[in-house]
Image (cartoon, rainbow, N blue to C red):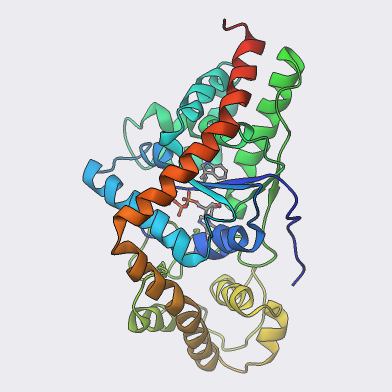
Length: 330
Ligand code: ATP
Ligand code: LTN
């Protein structure tokens, strides 16, 4: 697999503490964060974004710490990169307001994620509409050149670029125009039960998502029961075999060979599923083990975050102030 990150680049990415990390988050985003971490990389737990859907305050509190522990367990090293919590750096919410004033209702209401999530509830929160503007603020505050994210975030990245260009044209060159970076395989891991829908923390069918902290027996069961098709021919083809192709992409991402090469090794679905289960269990076990150690010491997790918050604020503050001044705030 090609190395897709240039580690001298300024990087920023985020993950919502909206539930337990699943393999879509891990393969689509977090694994690339680990591979690309460097002193110029900033990763945040976007707790403000998690408020866009209903969430119990106690759950959000727990899940934020869980999320930090999962990122550390997955391999982020706070000695190398900066790991922080979005709401602890007030410039995110502040810049978001400024950017809302250069964004249009029309462009926000066209976002696919907004339409999907708003459709599922009556009286959705305004934050669901303005969600991508806050994401743009996250990225632009750090002058990020690269944003490692899953495929589902392409449209939000495009919006960020448009808003940044519009701001720069109107108020002066303040923001760096970022690029999205997506992994070569598993950039969009699909739900194992409904392969037409992406695996998700907030909308999930039972058995549809594999969580990084799942027990081996659960992982095995979910893969065995994954929806495929009525043929038994192993072929990588998203058009006619979405369920199987999803499994092959997951396999490819964990193993490093291409989905086509993996497909050529099998003549039936049973053996493929069984080998995939072994591979996923072996790959996730060390993360789950480190997670349990780390999670038992919330004070240490808190110390990591406080250090990260400070480093992040030092970068974000000056950019926010330049943007505010450029717009005429005194
Ligand atoms: P929610 O369901 O609450 O919207 P989510 O599971 O979509 O959450 P986020 O926290 O919004 O996850 O996303 C964190 C990162 O994981 C993003 O870079 C996103 O692109 C990536 N990601 C999320 N789901 C998938 C998926 N199914 N496949 C690949 N990448 C994914
Ligand atoms: N919207 C993203 C999460 C997110 C993000 C960011 C990703 C919020 N802010 C900044 C990259 C950069 C999502 O995955 N749903």
